[in-house]
Length: 156
Image 1 (cartoon, helix red, strand yellow):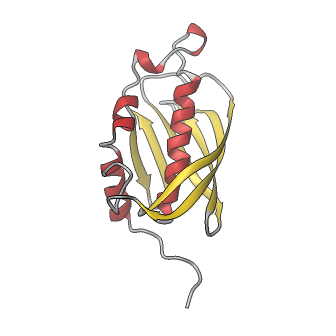
Image 2 (tube, helix red, strand yellow):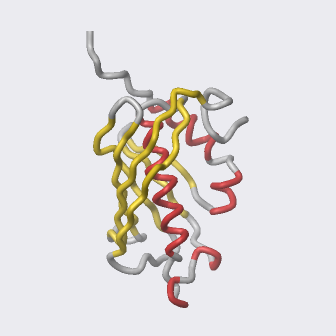
């Protein structure tokens, strides 16, 4: 008997992402959530618009938008453990390496370690040429309370 919890299937993760992508938050921000190979959380802005830009009056993505990319990608790594449990980002730390520019950008997050109620994750923001432009680390609290729908935070 193993102490390691079973991981969700790719089908469960895809369903979580499908429902989360219907949320007002992701819709408003123009972001899309997906999971790669059951081990990575990816949040994209497939069509960067003027509302995403504004870094120092340039065409760079605004830092607040990048923070949202990181918050969602790191927060949703909890689904890689159990997509039915509520979670919340407790701490988020970011560093910027170069301006994040382009017409499509993404954040990729992975779990670094986890315990019963907390996980630690790291993420990176990449431009359309796959250059790392920013990095983040975060702490996520895992709740024992399931989502109201039992599948995703997007459905009440």
